[in-house]
Every structure is written in structure tokens, then in C-alpha cells.
Image (cartoon, rainbow, N blue to C red):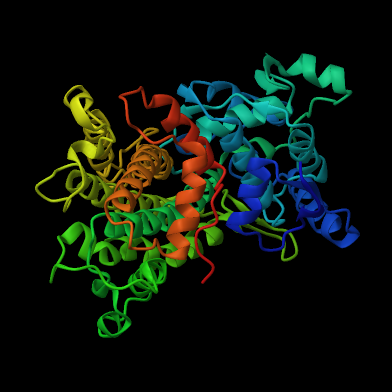
Length: 514
């Protein structure tokens, strides 16, 4: 990990999306607070539950079965086994495994919730979760199997099982049995206290951890799409007056205004205006701030939703030890995350569609205002056999179509499950996974557009040598030229695409300082 001077502390205080993302990317270390007051508050909940059990209190999921089995009384001598049965029978996940980054985000998100001190768990449980993060012992978590209410039960069962030394983990690049890794590191498997299985699993950690990562990627995609639009306006000899401050002052959406201001700054130039400038460019250029601005305006709202969920106690029941109350409710319901992710993927896919339309203009000699067909750099007789970005434009169209297809909201597909106990569920985890898929496809579109933008700007420079590229675009062009050779003779572009995608994922280019 890089930033040892600024580690993330889990002490019940408010965390941010950036905190979770940094832990996920291993750019900041993290630790469980050693503060005595914090630890005493955590222990208070577990001790309160112990007293209730000694007094024959009835506690859902502790002295009763789960879900519709809440009327089943558990014999006292079997109560210690109940949490282990919970994670065992929920071991039925399927689909791809969460990535290491996603898994770290899930672990950190669950630790943040339990550190609120309202779940009735022991300090030992929090310490075990912190150990997984410290040593980068990553449970192998199948992505599919959660309906997003009663929490992310099935995927989080893999976290609970690993804490107890069971199932498999990814450790130092290898998939291994947890028990072997624990023995190697001298870590004792946890024996869960009565409510701890429920506390680990009955929450929104998977959908929320994934949402934190989605938010950060969406924020960067917004900036990249804005810079790409600036490059495409310039390359197509477009009209910079479409982004005038006075124009955007009369439609006061802050995100839309910000996108326009960024493009305006990108296009600022001391060079004389081009001749024959069009009165109005096509919508994908002229209306770009309006499309990008939807996501830009929504991001602060999405941040509030995601961070409120991140900093919540979201299992059931809530254990209010200070007031000696057990509060039964439904905080495991992931509706807010479901709404944010369904909305976010819609706005992201619209940006992919915007960029797809821009590329369609750039490669077509009917609309690109003097650039060669398909942005091919070949000249002379060899121009006849070279096809430039013809196939890349087809791939961009395919990725865009798939992104748009995946914008169907997951949250409207609530299902009644578990003998109609869970009869209205959020589908928040599916929405988060959908959003990440839409982001993946849209980032592929962005990578292709960076290749196209670099090509188009170079070709425009060649045609209009008297027009100087504005400073911000010149800097971006220089960075792209280091990564992407000018396409003159046809060549495979998948290697370039994968290289650019790696740079996008690491946010290699600083876009805007507002």
C-alpha cells in the first residue's frame, strides 16, 4: 500500500467513497481503532445480548430461526450452532467471482457498518475482518445470489465462512483453502457469537461496496467524456460558441454548466477563428454538456445516498445496548442503492451513446468536414487498401448498444422469496453489478474514442497547420501520442485498447481542476 501516512481508521466515524476506493485499490492502509471508548461501546452490544440470553430473552435470529422461521424456538444448547448454520446453508452463490478490488470494498464496507456499534457483535469479530484487509486475505465471493433485502445474505455468507476458517480465499495471487492460510499466518478461526452470523450477512455491504467503486469510475468517465468532446469539436472544425457562458447561464443546471465550462476552457485559443464555421453543429457536439451534465448533476446526489448507506447500521435487529433495546426492522433493505445504481447506469449509457454518435460523425466524410474517410492516415495508392477506424466504429456501436440494453432497472423486478417473508426486495446488488457492467462497456467506448480523438486531431493538424491546438488539448494529445501510434497502415487495435483501458482504470490523466 502506498499512503501509509494517511490510513483509514474504522472507529464508527463517517467514511467516504474515496476511503473505500482507496482501500480497494490498496493505495491506503486501514486499521481498526484502538480507542478504549470505541471498543467499550462495541463490547457493550455483545454483553447486552449475553445478558438477554441469560435471562431467557427472545431475540430474532439468536433464539429463533431466520426469516419465516422466526416462530421456531431454538433449544438453548443449540443456540451457539445457529450462526454457523446460517452461513453454511447460504453457501449457494454462483456466477463470476468478485474481483480483488470489489472484495476489498465489500470487506471494508461491512466493517464500516459493524463499527457503528449497533449490531451486537464482539470486538473480536471486527478485528478478524480487519485482519483480512491487513493481510489481503480475500474471500472468493460469487457475485450472484442476492435479492438485496435481508441483506446480501448469500455473497456475505462467504465472508462469514472465511472468518471462521472455512471455504477458499485468494491470497498472494493463489486460490487456497482458508484454513491453510490462517494456519500459515497464525490466525485463529472465529467462533461466532449468537448474533454474529446474522450481523455479518444481514446487510448491504456487497451492493454498497460495489456502488462506491461505480461512483468513482462514473466521476472519472464524466471528465473523460468532456475532454473527448472537446477534442472532437476541435477535430471536426466545430463551433466553440455552442459552449458560451452566457448561453448556459440561462439554463442553470450546475453539472451541465460545469461540463460546458470545461469544454469552453479546453477550446480556448489565441489562434484566429476558422473560416466557414458552421452556425450549428449536430446534437452530439452541440448538446454534449446537456448529456454529460445529467450524470454530472446526479453524482453529488448519488454520493449522498451511497455514503449514507456506507455509514449506516444496516442489519436486523438493531441492538441499542445503551438503552437496552432490541429494535426489529428492515435496515437491510437496499432500495436507496438500487435506485442510485439504476439511475447511474442510465446516465452513463447515455454518455456512451453520445460518444458513439460523435465517432460516427468523425469517420464519415459527409460529416467530418475534410477529414479522411474512417480517419485513415494512409495516402496515395495505399489509401485504397487501408480502412482506418472502420472496424473500431463498429465495435463502439456494439458496446454502446449492449450498455443501453443493460439500463433496464433491476429495482422494478422485486420477487417474493423465503416463504413470502421477503416479499418486497430491492434487487440492489443486481443493480450495482449492472452498473459496473455498463461502466465497463462505456469505458471501452471511451478507450476507443481516445484512439479516435488522437487520430482525428493529428489529421486535422496536418490539414490546418496555421491553427494552433489549444493548450489543454495539446497536453492531452501529447499524452495520447505517447501511448498510441498514428494509424497509417491498418493494424490490430485491441492491444492499444487494452493499454488505454488500463490507464483509464488507474485514472492516469488528470482532467480538470475546477
